[in-house]
Length: 271
Ligand SMILES: Nc1ncnc2c1ncn2[C@@H]1O[C@H](COP(=O)(O)OP(=O)(O)OP(=O)(O)O)[C@@H](O)[C@H]1O
Ligand SMILES: [Mg+2]
Image (cartoon, rainbow, N blue to C red; front, side, top):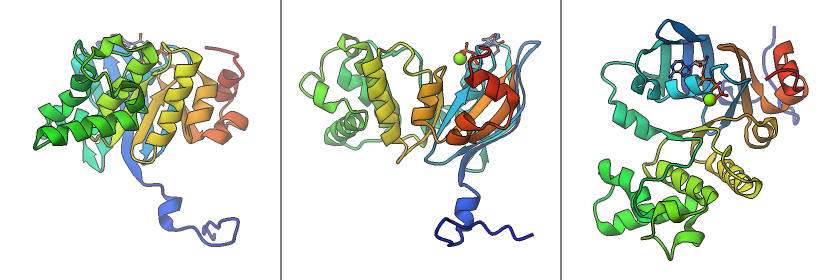
């Protein structure tokens, strides 16, 4: 069989386009909380410079899978992960892996904005300081400025960098947390329902930001909003009862999914 894939213009696609470059590969990932099994042999690969949305009803294992990508599950007592997860072909659960370094490469933004009780400047400077990413104060100032710019917040905070991070609005705080994540130059950014505590305007700003960040970062986002998944992601993975039901192009997922359970979920029949 001729498997050559052609574009609309008839040109063959390069192999690179046929086999997407995967930033992370999850193979037979299972997660247990004590005796309880939360994920069942999940095989899900994360494409580079792509936004992947994780959807599915409450309790299906989205956050659990997300946390397994930067070993945040390690911080939960009794939690055990089996299977294999790689970042650029390196097993992230290998004993040689420095977890602090891993979490700098695979950063995380949480559901509720959680700035440190420090100034706006210090919130962003904190990570680069710990990881020694700067040589001088000027370097650090530069990292803080560019990170805030990337998070679409610079214009709003440049004259109040020494004010407390918590003095910002909820939406600004979430963008501050994104700036903080971006400041250590991660390769992957994990976001667990980053807009669920935000109003529609703040949500729109964060969504726009996610769209821009994709150029430089690989993003995995958990969301309860089908509209948000459709707006921000190129790939969508649907979970149900700890299993990966389907992973597909977002367009296809929302128009013509392969699995009946996906169909039911997006039609609002459960969850
Ligand atoms: N720390 C924990 N200890 C024990 N069980 C847990 C823990 N965290 C999650 N679970 C269980 O694992 C399963 C998956 O939970 P998870 O939080 O990953 O789901 P989710 O898809 O993110 O749900 P939601 O949409 O409500 O956030 C659930 O049955 C949950 O009760
Ligand atoms: Mg969750």
